[in-house]
Amino acid sequence: MISNIGSYTNQNMLYKNNLSQRQKQEPANPPAEKNVKQIADYMKNHNNLDVTIDYLDKNNIKRYPNALQKELEVVARGENAFYTDQLKLAVAPKSKPSLILHELGHAINAQTKKAFKYLQKSRHVALATIPMATVTAAGMFKREDGKPNFFELNALSIGFLAYLPTIIEEGLASIHGVKAAGKFVKDKSLLNPLKRNYAFAWMTYLIAGIATAIGVKQTIIENKKA
Image 1 (cartoon, rainbow, N blue to C red):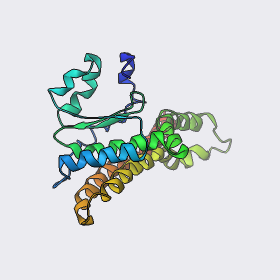
Image 2 (image 1 turned 120 degrees about the horizontal axis):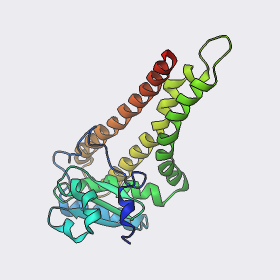
Image 3 (image 1 turned 90 degrees about the horizontal axis):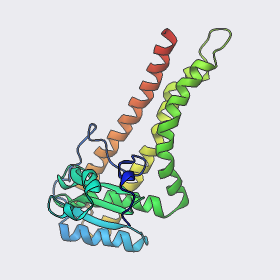
């Protein structure tokens, strides 16, 4: 299953969270580790997922190849969690096991319904192409009357659109995790810390989408001045 070490750094395959935006934290009063593992196994089996689930620390990370260990260090330190569809691997810190539920939500998106698969694959393509294409088109298709063209007028909306697949897919991953956890608790209020944590995390993607939109607009304005 683990092959092609050079691909481990491919950002299109690793569903990592940007640590400059936030550091993943486990919610206060998280589900017990035993319960989390039970929920994770349920998510894997119920959805027929082809995925290896692992909870990492500084000791057990050593069983992975050296090249992959570099990608997993932030997980072992308790700073992040991720799912990679290429390796069919979902990992979370051993110290913060409840983070695995969100990552398995990514696995559900990648391996179940076609719409979810398309959404997950399109998020990186959209971010890599739409902002630059918008800036380029704004400069190419100038109106003869000197008025702003379509791309200049709609730069904010188009820029935000580039981040929309990511915003939606991240939200769906959290929904899958919370929904699965809900099947294992009688008192649904116990899910509130998990919901708050996932909602806060989702907000960082929303903010990043707004920042992307502003960046596209500002770039067009600066290019026009040049």
